[in-house]
Length: 197
Image (cartoon, rainbow, N blue to C red; front, side):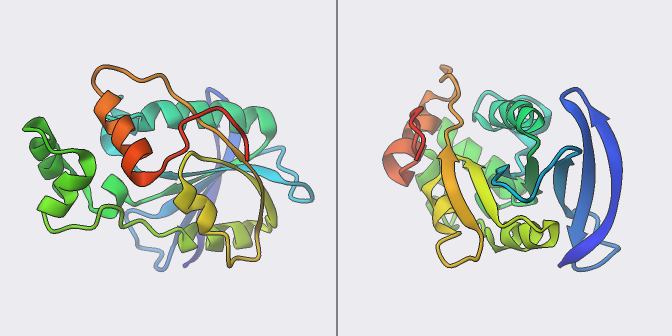
């Protein structure tokens, strides 16, 4: 995977450099890095690794907290001169079609994990080596990681990029996503509290 193209884009939170990463320049769905204009790679950089969630990120679905996490991350990253790595790993890596199938199963009582396994899929099929490659390309060696997911922290255990601290990214539960958030906390070990580590 390598940097294929980039351009400056202004968004409500500020001006960023948007960089597309892919193996092939013809890739229609590249991973992207949104990098603050004021980034300083000589100190720990505030980073969010965000896996694509079309329903939450684009349409504001209340079934998950992804869209709210994305917007909060962008606010923090703009303030801290950080970067957001947007990985094309829809539905914890199962893809949009299977995610919608899993939603139908959740509608009849299965939790988010059991719905995936009922479909013969992994509970979480995401990979974070992509993010590590992107950070290498950006020259970032130390990060403050915006996450509640211990798997994202663990992904750096054998990497040459240091996680200086974890920054929590807490959202307010809604009636539509309370079960989803409980499953993430109770079954996946997500750190849904405000303490930094």
